[in-house]
Image (cartoon, rainbow, N blue to C red):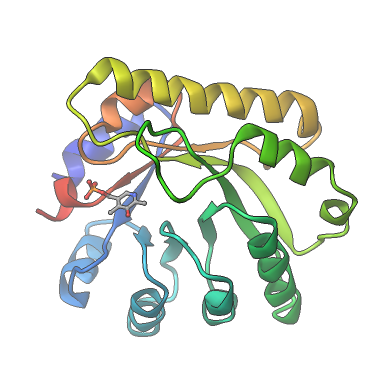
Length: 214
Ligand SMILES: *Cc1c(COP(=O)(O)O)cnc(C)c1O
């Protein structure tokens, strides 16, 4: 399955984040030896434990909701934090990154699903954040793009519309705030059930778990 997905992505410039949550070390290592070097976890404790046991050239992404009091555990090594959805969280990530003398790449999570999801920014929140004076002082985070999760539904039209919404948010922010910033380039959208649709709608990073690991 890994090869099939990699081949599909190869022609599209989309990065595969292999979502290894709940999967044992041996299975991750096996996939690593098949050439997959980017893995995503959604829980801090699991991420920390796995990172300690697995090869150090793995690129680790935290894709799930992050509580501010847990940022310190992943700040030394995390390669990207996908689900950043509050000013408070950004400030904490910046603080912990500063302690580690590094810059942590982050994505802004947007609420695009129809269901009343607890997490994610609205575009007005993002505008306020990016225009705030405080934001300009944060030197230890790098905003690399946006992330979103579509509604869990078989209705392809709805999922498509939600991905298009996220793409519009990306374009708006890119044009307004990041035209001079090549690092702002990622649209993290698409999972096992909808990644092909996500790629058609402009995804640059798909987060695939069950389809890969079975
Ligand atoms: C679990 C998870 C995925 C992967 O879901 P699959 O349907 O198993 O591919 C992607 N993104 C997030 C945020 C997740 O928690």
